Image 1 (cartoon, one colour):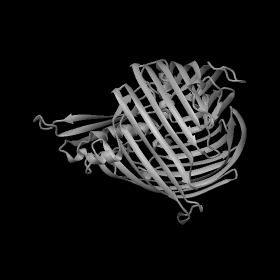
Image 2 (cartoon, one colour; image 1 turned 30 degrees about the horizontal axis):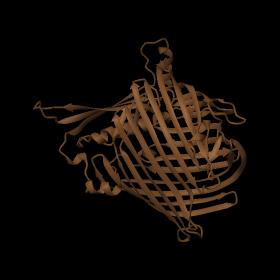
Image 3 (cartoon, rainbow, N blue to C red; image 1 turned 45 degrees about the vertical axis):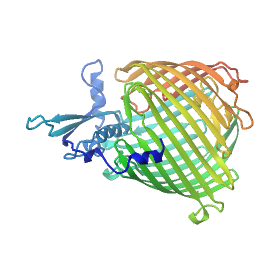
Length: 519
C-alpha cells in the first residue's frame, strides 16, 4: 500500500471523537505490587520486598492517559493508552478496562467508567549479566534503578565487557520531563578504546490522532572499530565523530486506524574514520503512512507477559541533502532511505511480518554505503505455551563505508558457528525454532522453557556469486529462562549449536549463553 493510494481514501482529519459516543466517566487507577503476598512458603520475604519497593505513583500513570473525564469514548485511544503503559520499563503489565453505566436506567449508556490496572516490576537491582559466545565471555556488573522513588525516572551505572571493548557507563532517563510527555536520556561512557557522551530529548507521537512530535539530541564519540575476516580480527579503524539532530513532525491526514505524517529535520554528521573524513550537514524531509492492527499475545518472546504485535502496514521515505550552504563539506551529498512493513494475519496467534528497507548516500556521482534489507518473520502458536517461530533475512551492501561490515555467526543468529565467522557484502539467514514455555513464575521468581532450532546462512563477498550450496547449517537445543517480576528484558537463552558443515579451524559444537529471546 503506497502513500498515494492511502491519500485517496483519507481525505480529511477525523477521529472517533467526532461521532456520537458516550463520554468518559470516572477514571480509577489501581497499581499492583511486585509480589503477591497471599499464601506460599515465602510470603514473609515477599512482604519485605514489597515494603522496600516504592510503588509507582498514581500521577505517573495518569500522565500517560490519552483521554479525560467528559471526553467522548475513543476505543483506539483507550487501547493505545494500554500499549503505551506497557512500554514503560518499570511496569510488567497494564490493562485498561471500561464499564458502561446507565444512570437513569433507560437502556442507553450514559457514561463509560474506566479502570487502569498496572503491575509494577522490581526496579532496584544489581546488574550482573554474564553470557558466553563461543570462546568469548561477556559480562556486566553494576546497579540500576528503573523507577526512582516511584516517579518513573531511571538511572544505572555499570562496567561491561562486550565483544569489542570494555565500557564504564552512567545513564539517566526521564520518561516524563517536568511532568510532560517529553522523554530524556543522558549518557556518559568511558571505554577501553575511547569515550562517548550524548543527550537526547524526544516528544514522540502518543497515538494516531496526536498531531505533532519533536526530537533533538547531540553527542560525540571516540572509539576503534574492529575489522574481521573469516572470524579473525585483522585490525582496527580509529573512529571519531560528533552528531546533532533537530526534528519536527506533523500528522497531516488521519482517519480511523490510519495516519499520514511528515517531518523535517536538520542533522549534523561529522566523522573521521581512519584517513577518511565525512562532514555532512543535512536538511531532511520525510513522509510516513501507517495503520494499527494490533494483536496481544503471551509466550512469544517473553514468558507470561503481554506483547503487542502490529499487523498493520507502515510505509516511509526520507530524502536528505548536504551542501556547504548548510554547513557541510564541499562535496554535496544526497541521503535516501525508504521502507515498507506489512503484517499478514491468518489468525491472531498465526501471522507473518514482512519488512523491506533501503538506505544509501549519493555523492561524487556514485552510490556509497548502500544497504538493502528484506525480512520475513513467522509465528504460529500451537497452544498457549508452545510456539513455532521463524525468520528469513537477506542483506545486500554496496560500496560500504570502511567501518561497516556484514557479519554472520553465533552472535547474529547463525548458531553452531563461531562469532563473526563469515564476512562479505551479501548475507542470508534462515531460522526455525520450536519453543516450549514449561513453567511460569516459579516461586514468583523464575520461568523456564526449552527450544529446538535449525539455522542456515552464509555471507558472500562482492566477487562471489550467491550460491545456495555455500549455506552453512546448524541444529541445536536451548534452555529458556526468564523472570517477569524481576526483569523487564526479554527472556535469556542458553544455546548449544552443532554445525553440520565443517569450518576449518573451528569446533562444530558452539555454546552461547545470554542472548535475547527475540524472533
